[in-house]
Length: 117
Image (cartoon, rainbow, N blue to C red; front, side):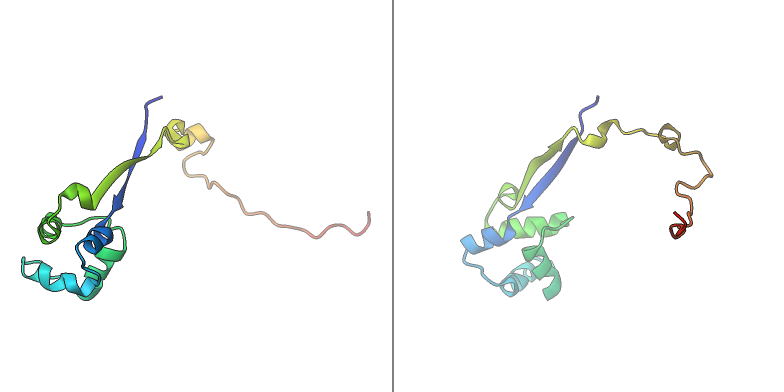
C-alpha cells in the first residue's frame, strides 16, 4: 500500500496580532494599505478570524512585514492523517460491482403489510 498523507495547517494570525498589541481587525487595514494591499473590512476580518484556504504571496509578505515575524509564526503545517482508510479503495466503478450506464440505486415501492396474516 502506498502511504497517503494528509497535511493540515494552523493559521496563527490572530495570536501573532495579539502579541503585537493589535486587537482589532480594523487596525490591520491601514497597515496593509500602506504596503499596497487593498482588502475590504470583511476580507481582513475573515483573514484574521478564519483559517484561509489561500493567501496571496504579497499579502502574506505584507503580514510578515507588519507583524515583524517569519512565515513560520503565521503558518504551521502539520500531519493530519496517515494511510487513510480509502487508500486501498477501488479505482474503477467496475471493481465495486457498478456497471457503466446502470444506475447505482434502483427505485423501490414500499407496500403496506398484509392484514391477512
